[in-house]
Length: 119
Image (cartoon, rainbow, N blue to C red; front, side, top):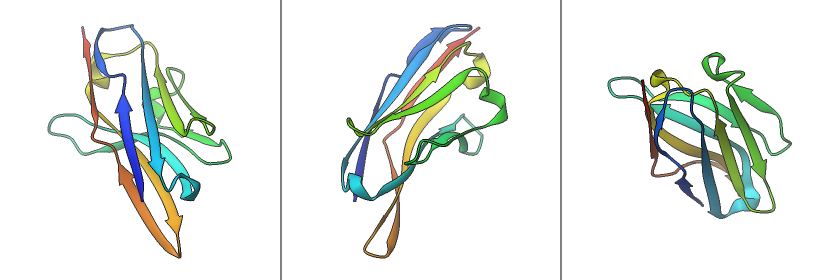
């Protein structure tokens, strides 16, 4: 199993930047894709960005050009650099890891970190 711990959320003014970090522990060798999801009040959780073990990335259209996802395999950490933040980016951001071990697939989640963007 994989354990995930997020950090880096907070309150920022529109146009500002934040960097989220997600440190993985446990069965880290089994991790394939890691990603960031967010959930705003009254809305469904949505995928924001994902990165594979090979470094391929995918970002939702609404954050392209503003957010960057990266991965440091030596530190077992994935980052989400968020620039030019908008009030609509306000949400709880959750780290996710997809892993496979002994023929079984797992979805692991962090506890979430709040990002609030004021106008």
